[in-house]
Length: 497
Image (cartoon, rainbow, N blue to C red; front, side):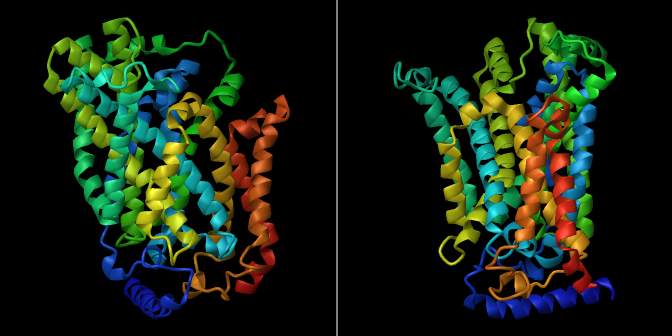
């Protein structure tokens, strides 16, 4: 069967399904399969999506914890590049289902977890996304806070001495304003997100290069900057090569994989709009494998330059740009710099942290909760999670949830690749009595496999000799859950042969 015949068959499936959807409480207009005529994202749109998500303050600061712990600049970049290359594999594989069938993540996981059981991975993924949404919104809010402080001298004194959890009224007002901007794009829909990413991507890359150019010009050469980058290491601990690998490199690699472990699950939420598999595969590789290492390198180089220029490491770009503004005595420079950070944070936040929970929450009650309402609920959770406190345990949080999502990812890939070999019954994904009903809508094998993966990762906390299981939580959890699910479902696979 050629590509054209395949597309015609998928189109016919969609037409048949569209006619049945109004009678199903498992669907609404937002989580129904995307018709072929609406699959308009080419490889540039997919690449721009990844550029917009990668160019953000957490990426800029990503290498900070690695270098502070004892890695040098190229080792931290290697961990970032290798982590991206590893996570690209499940990204492309899970994206395949989204592009082939036009389905979002909450519908995709019905195949493995069941029509009811799918709520479990969807909500787990959503809670992590809400945490990230809160963190990014807080960072963007602080950029707005700097802008208002520059424009209006009385802004910083609003609320007097009142504080809550260490922050005053101006910070919280700026946070809520940036939250409202995010909610606007959620309300405007996914096409507004595509346009935002396409416009922001080239602009953000250019601004990063300009910041690197400033550092090189100020210091004299890139070589001098990299020579001084070891000054960023704050630990005095000396490790052997074996200790370095297992105690430092592997946890850093796991944290890096964990950075996109969320998107590796719900990437169908975006690739359901892709024109072809070629577009989604090439677009993801182009955007992810280049932009994130580049921007992380800019973060390392610029921060190392601040050691030379100011005698201290300034990892936070908001603090650095505020200092540059003060030195230049140019309010315009400060406002422009903070606007760049606002755009960078907004483009990441909307795509990476709102679309998934919006779809997942909508999937709980498709007939009552729309994508818009789901996004609003996710936004409210992002406030209640106190993101300014979550930032205090950044690296540990990355490693911890990577094991949780790795266990889910292992089940999903085992089902789609090994059990069903890339073939899903589209109509049954929206049926209460179809092939994915299992027992009362829950596939027990998926639940058992997920728990097994999580338990194995947590065993790394039980004894020092097992620490590698937690340090490599994503790897240990996903491998175990994949194997356990494949064994439990082997009879199903024989039946599909």
